[in-house]
Length: 218
Image 1 (cartoon, rainbow, N blue to C red):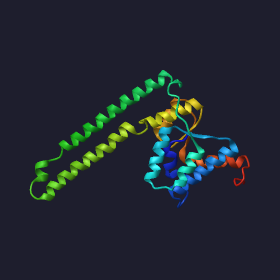
Image 2 (image 1 turned 90 degrees about the vertical axis):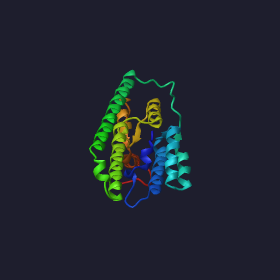
Image 3 (image 1 turned 180 degrees about the horizontal axis):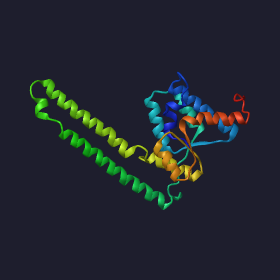
Image 4 (image 1 turned 60 degrees about the vertical axis):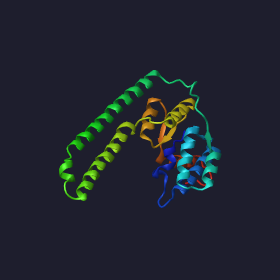
């Protein structure tokens, strides 16, 4: 089960290799593994749409999309048929509750920092002073956004795409390939095998080498 992060991560690139070159090499490995080892790679449609959007934004060639559609199987997860233990739902609720508390703490810290600014002193005199105040306030706001995003989203399931990936992996009893910390954490909760994205190309090469596939000998 392949996640979007696998294709985007720097971890799959060789030295001086472009994103397109790395993705084409990865898809060649996926194709060879399917033909030689009967290993099929899947993505839910939501992940496929997310991935193709990101790749188009990076202006890769149509060859990438052609190989992606040929060798990576799209399948919708059985959202009604796959059962998920109630404990996982409890864990997710607890996690989100804790994240909301962290987000509130980040917001409170930013407000206190703004309160410590002295607008009268900073805006007195030249326009540069006024600009300095606005720049400092903007800096605090920008910093708050970054911290808030990390508090709420880093290391947690934060999208339907992530959940589709895990549900489909559970349905097919498949492993998950991702660099997303949130997916990795919840793959453990779901009892799923996982491989970090940057390791996946090397893993396929080792499998192919072990079976004596042409072009992958010692």
